[in-house]
Amino acid sequence: MCIGRHPAVRGMIDQPSRIRRVSEPRVREYWRRVWSEQDVAFAREFYAPRFVQNDRETTVEAFGKGAAAFLEHFEDFGATIDRVSHATTSS
Figure 1 (cartoon, rainbow, N blue to C red):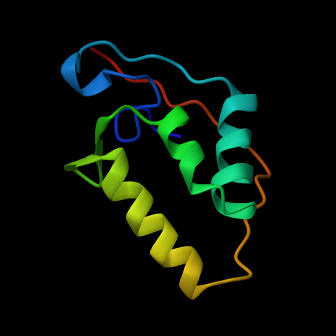
Figure 2 (figure 1 turned 120 degrees about the vertical axis):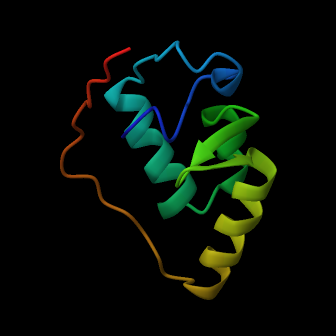
Figure 3 (figure 1 turned 60 degrees about the vertical axis):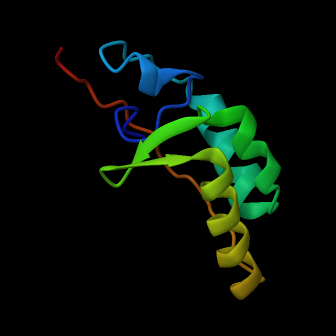
């Protein structure tokens, strides 16, 4: 997971020079809960209130609405994580 694009630390967008690593268990929990168990509310615990996704600033509320719409359309969607790699970012 590229933390620069998907900050999982509250307030990350307000401090863009501070990159924090998210643990592998936490990343796996995010994918399991949000995408496999369709617990979109968990995104509030994972993402900062405002963050950058696909080079655009967004909010956790907007993300949640989009994820819920996606999951409603693909009722049997689930995600399996085989490997989590840690990207390194230079400051």
